[in-house]
Image (cartoon, rainbow, N blue to C red):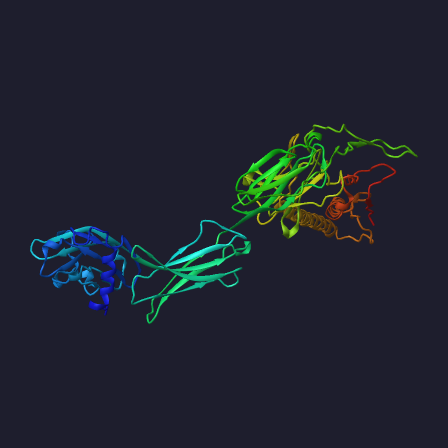
Amino acid sequence: MAPTGVASLPVALLLLLLLPPGTRGGSWAAWMPPAVAGLEGTCVVLPCRFEYPEELRPAAVHGLWYFGSPYPKSYPPVVARSRPAAVHESFAGRAELLGDPGLRDCSLRLWRLSPELAGKYYFRGDLGGYNQYSFSEHTTLEVLARPVLEVPPEVVAGAEVELRCRVPDNCPELPPLLGWEGAEGLEGAAGGEVREDAGGARNLLGLLRFRPRREDGGRRLGCSVAFANTSLAFEASVALDVQYEPQVVGLWGPSEVVEGARVELGCEAEGRPLPLLSWFRGAAVLREEPAAPALRLLLPRVAPAHAGAYSCVAENRHGRHNHPSWDPGVRPPPRRALGLLCPFWGHPISPIFPPPDNPDPPVVLPESRCTAGGGEGVRCVCSAAAVPEAAVLFELPSRNLTVAEGHRDFAAAPRGGPGTGGGPGGVVTGILTLRGALEPRLAVLCAARNAHGTTARQLRFHHPGGLVWAKVGPVGAVVAFAIVIALVCYLSQSRRKYWEGEEGGDFGGREGTRGGHRGVTVPSPCPQARWLRGAVGRWALGAREGPGAPPEPPPPKPGRGSPEEPPEYAEIRVK
């Protein structure tokens, strides 16, 4: 329990000395701190001192505390020594009139603080009869869930900084114990404690001084509070936001520039806060953007007037950094051959070159096509020639899709020198790989664009389904024709045997003769079948002959024919 009587006498005397001159022994007056704080679950003492007119000379002095309002009808008392049963249930067993009203000490102690106890507290002096007075002075109690961690508004790398951990120390029975978490490895770290008294409200102030570095950004620092002989513990932490001067960490662009080419420059910078990035050519500002980690500069078509030193500058309130300038030379574009003169014996082939400034749009080359890749889908190639170099892409209208560089199914072919896929004026090739099931009417467009225009062409495309039928179709045709050939031969042979069996004569081993018909000739069986069988075999197996192979002559018709090519007849003699 809290000490009373003699133990509170020094506090009462101190409060009496702190009363303003003219209030002691004068009229009704009270003094108390305007605000007091305490951690949740701990206790707090509200120091209080009051005065009343000396001419009253009361036989007994009592005191009451009210919460939220100085008037009794609005809220039951927090504590009332003369009327203990009238105390509000929320404060039963948690509020105690620590001071002695007879000694003009009205100090109040509250135990087991909780958020519902936070608010304004008013004191009422009761001297008996009508000599009662509610003071307008009051104390505001703040119940904290954690200590207050104070961080400077700006933490700059290299500059010493001080963190403060403020802990209420208004309960003499529970002195706080303070410590720091996460301070290991900080440059120049040093700690300390200070006790402060602001108008009767006391605090323990923990101090941590150190010199932050860039790599300390994001480090979590915290102060912890504990109380002896209790399980109460509190902690407050903060992530350091270390600010530092900017620095340009990267700059990119082509090593050489060709007149008429499209050039893109870029730079990256670090800084806290994010810096203002600017592109300069000499002293002229070409482009700038605030709070940007990167900045690009696009020159759609380079001309000799664009020559000069280009520099990227990063700047924030902590400093400025300028990357070494970029100054490539601008050279004329390479001349591109359009055709070849017919060579003569002993003379080299001479290329024909267009004028250096050719305003023609890109040209999609004939080798652009789509080819089936077996089980790997379809591979489409788009090649384009242009000055300056063109950007190629694929368009799939049925899917409402455009595939360009950067897409997972797009690949750029290796480049060589000018005219072979490299340089600002040459051939650029893109490769598109289509995987999975493809719709039968899928169309693929090859598009190429540069500063002079855009050219698009639909690629020749063979759906995998068509390739399967191209393999199955000839096989089925061969089987069908073989069946027809066998049927024709079978009917021809059967008819011949019928003729031979009807006569029953001896033909003397001469094939093709018939008794009773002297001098009559019979055609040899199946000449059309032999020609058809040979044609089908050549068609099924002889695709290698190509489209230029001469056609097979039709089978000979039965007749006498010319003397040079007599038809094949068999003479029938009668024995």
